[in-house]
Image (cartoon, rainbow, N blue to C red; front, side, top):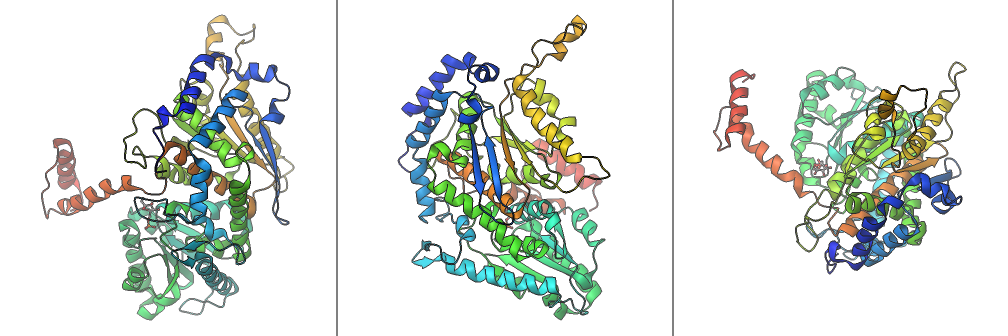
Length: 549
Ligand code: F6P
């Protein structure tokens, strides 16, 4: 926020870093729990998610973090002194807080309801447009699911292929998988990579007569998406042999209506430049979700996020879930220097959540210039986000989480209820037992291996413990709860960006590589020669010698 001073000269920051320097030995989780029987009550929140068919209680347990009352109170002071609330109010007040692109940041408006207070941008209530497009989505998805919208031979649409990348892929792809059990419409497929294998692999599984292609691109200029869209159209026409069939099988989602028309797509669903790509699953970009799970479930996804918007806006910092999670992240990443953060969903249907949050977080907060144009070189901003679905991760990288030289703060995410047992085996009890055991093991460790273990093995069986985790537990993976979960992370990212005084809503860092690739492409076709370093030139020459051209 303009006017914010350097983080490292902020008096609260200085107090916080001094406190860590002087007290780090005392911040031992085992001792903290031993000395305070009320620790869980103090550092956990139970929230009732108000959705009659898919809400229920949620638990956010942050007691297994290396914090005491002083740390937490200094972190809340930091949020105040970094003007987090003012910045949040500026976003919800439709100010153009994305200053490097001169845009407002209104993804929350996509979750609004018709009679919500107006969100006015440049003199216009954006809710009106949002509702109009939602109605278009509702009517289109209804038509496709009910078989009113059919393919060029009159057959019902059975498959949807979403062609997009980044925010135009990761969100819908993650949500469609997460809500598999709510499927009522066509099967969705996602093609993002410009590597032809991705498209050809999907095309092998679908029938042109019953497939709807969604070309999803905010800008409608993204090279990968346009290349895949053109190839999909060519594939389709080779089979349909009739240009007029395109209108039944290709729809577009974009802010760039002109480019959509230029491409030759008549049916499109609009969204607006105040929606960042990585925050766009709530917009028309979510069409594949609505087609798969039906509009009512899509609406519930939006409602879950809308509930969290209110919570973020109205709840005092001390009980504000995104704020608490954000402050803990700042504590680890910027004060202590633990640079990565693991996302560990204990639900197979959420296996794509870590990749989704990778873009959401790393494209938002992977920045080193402040809003007031200074270079940041004395503290860490956005962490490295990674993870995998439990229990798979336990058999892959948890070794490092338990005994490695890095400390990786982690979010464990789980759901209390699941469907029936399979063949009398309670898979879900096994899953939940692991979900509970891992954070416990990470926290408690095992510093005194049993006497029965040979002496030379004991150092290898030593678990230091004291490794921090959050637990986010809710009743069931429903559209509403999923919407709420995603919005918690969106606002967490926002709060961290505010503390670091960076613009979480631009992505200039993706430009340079794109530009260089454009220049190299003709070189690979032997059409030009660029001026490169010897390594880059050596790689180009190797490809020219051994490649297809
Ligand atoms: O990677 C850069 C980026 O602009 C992302 O922010 C965005 O989600 C993705 O490319 C796709 O962009 P578009 O939706 O415009 O095709």
